[in-house]
Image 1: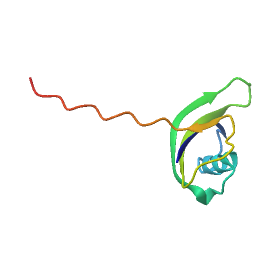
Image 2: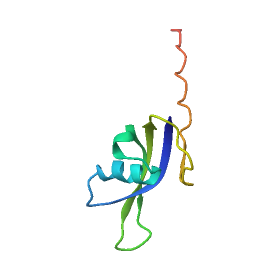
Image 3: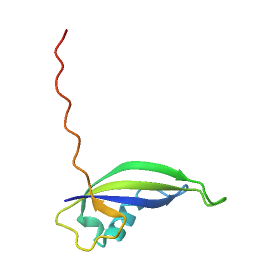
Image 4: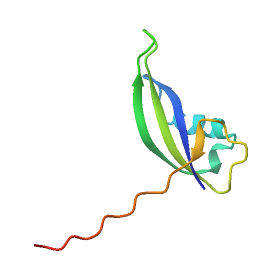
Length: 89
């Protein structure tokens, strides 16, 4: 099943591979249980001076279903359908 994990912090000097570890930790599963990971949104959080960080939303695919997910984890919305073909005028 596919889930959206919201607001994972990533400091400016950290490697992006830490996101996978943090997503697995937030979901309460091992890193190997994550099949597919995709960045959906990334925003810069500069509200605290001297503590600038990225807040990243990920979509992850797991083999099974998740029980008792935290508040910032939700099932991923269905993808938008492909647009229809347009005929030439």
